[in-house]
Image (cartoon, rainbow, N blue to C red; front, side, top):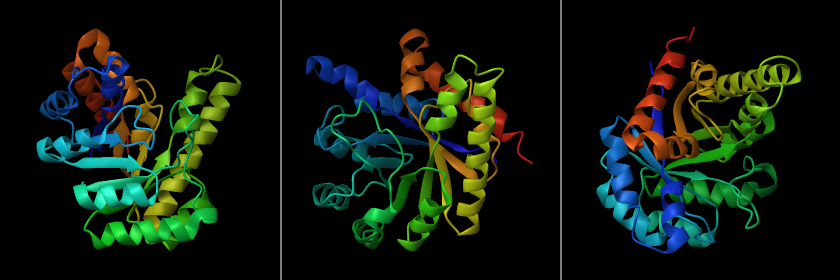
Length: 254
């Protein structure tokens, strides 16, 4: 089975917000992505509203015909927005106002009461509750404890290893194999606990294949590399290229 692809369109909004202009349209980006074969659309509504805006979420909920996944922090403000908007899924993520992008997975254990309360409210509203976490045993066990339905394993460390100066041979290759093993073991544990498993962060057509080969991973959330590629080849082609890369990797599953 080929893993699903949710296209993250945050950086379409980043370009728009650079000029506070109406273009490029996130709705148009979502529609083109769906037409190109995306299984869903992902956006991150940040507390600082640096790219996606509240109004975007409203219109995307109406326009997206596949699956709408929204990333957000587990704050009272955000959970209320989620319940009012009713996307298909919410992925709870950490937020640091000074970060350029999400820097790593949510540390569930120290925040377990807050996360559990948020998960329960989302589930009571019929929204799939997912946690964006590092592929570590204690985080996966905590995700099970708070009654999450899904985890999204952060692939940043793997992606960074693949991008390093010695990514083909030497230290980079060793680290990439280690991080891939962490992802494989984390995905297996999460599935054993009955959690659905997604993955994302830093993935490109060049490095997604090995991760797509992990049988327990059923969904990817990928944005920056697709939008970057779209600058040169167009969004439809960029989405299709990523879909093909995921399909190729999924075909290597044991």
